[in-house]
Length: 132
Image 1 (cartoon, rainbow, N blue to C red):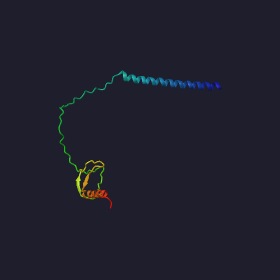
Image 2 (image 1 turned 120 degrees about the vertical axis):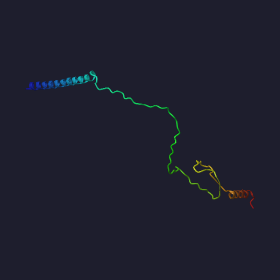
Image 3 (image 1 turned 30 degrees about the vertical axis):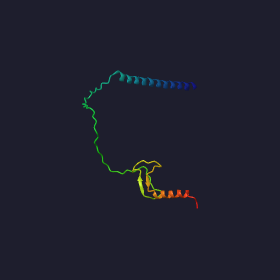
């Protein structure tokens, strides 16, 4: 009985091998026929005739753009500063205009300084005078 089982397994393996081999041959033939059809014959699709397009050429010229646009809007500065004096007094000189870029330490406004100058002069005289 053992011989029969071994013979059936050999027959089964041989059948599977033949099936695989015949599938591979059939696939190869189909691929070869498909490739031969593409390269063997030219496509008979109608060729398109190029269309004629009328083109008008002109020389480049330069002109000033006269377009004028009017608009209403609001502009705001990115940064601003409040300027306040350390002392009060009458303004005698303004050294900037609105929108100017100014640096730290620049004199922007001069005030009337007669009273302050008089006080400085009196202090210097008092310092130089001998004590009584």
